[in-house]
Image 1 (cartoon, rainbow, N blue to C red):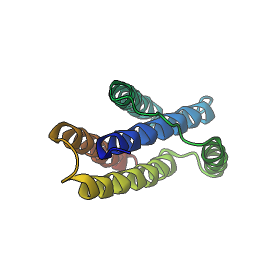
Image 2: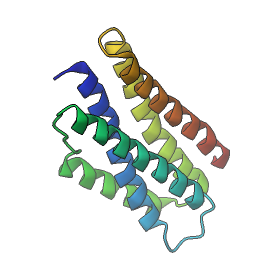
Image 3: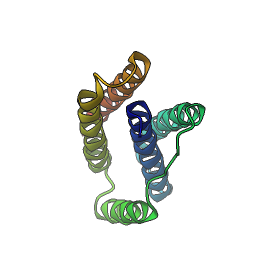
Image 4: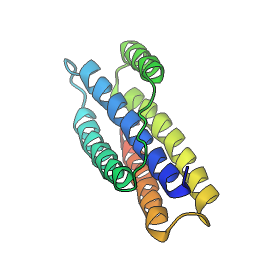
Amino acid sequence: MNENKELALHIYQDAEMASYTLTKLLSDLKERDNKIKKYIEEILKEYEKWKSKTKKFLKRNDSEISDVSFFVKMMTKMGISKEVKSDNSDSAIADLLIKGISMGSIDMEKKIKQYKDEVSYNELELAKEFLKFQEKTIDKLKDYL
């Protein structure tokens, strides 16, 4: 696979998984009075934008778009439900999200370093912009700890 397409696919899959996770989390928090819910909704909207943006890029470049596997999604769903039942405080939810987004940002940083000499300037900037979004999200989530 072309490196530009692989980098964009990585962003797409990260955004897709985050969107799925945040939607599930909001569903689990629906009947609860968490202050963090409003910020989770904002994060979800941003991930949805990233998902759409990278999907368009991949389609323009005739790339195959593969979603995250059903198994991974089911494992995530069960993990979220377990965590929310265990501790649904804003602090615990923020901690859970920080850990998940941090994993994604570490992977993104590795991809950027791996492909920095292989991809076009535009694709590299797209990846850097996505990483910056993730880092800002983590910083804002720390306010809820």
